Amino acid sequence: MLKIVKKIWMPIFLLGSLIFIGQYFYNQADRLNEVLYLAPRFLIIATVFQLIYWFVTVHCWQRIVIISTRTKISFMQAFSHIALVTLGKYFPGKIWGMVARASLMKQQGIDLHQSFHATFNEQLLLLHASALLSIALFCAITPNVYTISLCVLGAGSVIMIVPMQRIAFRVLARFSKKSWHKDLQGMVPLTFRQSTGLLAGYSMVWLTIGLVFCCICFSLFKVNPTFSVVMQLLLANTLGITIGFFAVFAPGGLGVREAVTSALLASELPLGDALLLSLFFRLWIIVFEVISGISLLIPSKAGAVRSVPPH
Image (tube, rainbow, N blue to C red; front, side, top):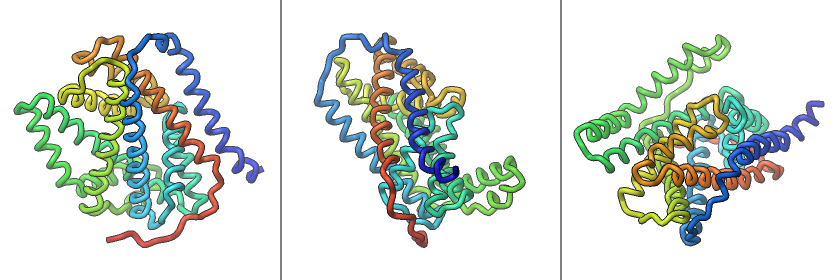
């Protein structure tokens, strides 16, 4: 029975994700009947940025796995790990993609505590990068004493990144189960060099997915791609995705992300257009997430290779 479950859980997981996605778009179908201006060249550029986004995301995860678990995984293995997490967020609770990834990593020789350590580092750095990029965009849009002060605080958070990791580990260990307490207390923070390198990588992740959002906007609406418009689009997309991440009650941030993004674009686009843009961007993301999910159906012949993390 266990062997059968191991063989069929991945397709069932994919099917479940697609059901949640399909239900969402069925409820939103009436909004897709709008007649839109179309500029295909921006869609081509968006595809290029999407591929860069995938490459940087997978590379960052590979680095985190090497550092956190002393295990080297291939690019395709890392890609399938990312695909699991992105599709799993559509299940209520949002943690199921990470749980599924931990299960897959265990099959590849990485124990549960190591995979949890890697995932915790990933999420911590991802959110930190989001905060830094948002602060920088705020400052670029409205440079004043408040936004400049935020930039100074952001720079300070980079300088203090290693102590901040230690604090995060202690807080996590304090509220964890007794069986996990010792392991979480033993989690070693990344070095300053490792942390800042990955922080730069995840900042690039946020920037590239934001540029995809910009390209979709310019492909659908006659909006001039000025500096201020691009900055506003990048900020709205970054904050929308981040706030949607914290909306645990909404699978994949469905609805929450679109509402936040649309509200932040009120100064640049009519509310109806902003909502439509958010919906088309969600459709774009889901199409590419489903494409990435195909990697989960390809049998992985190569196992994980043990390695010593670089100093």
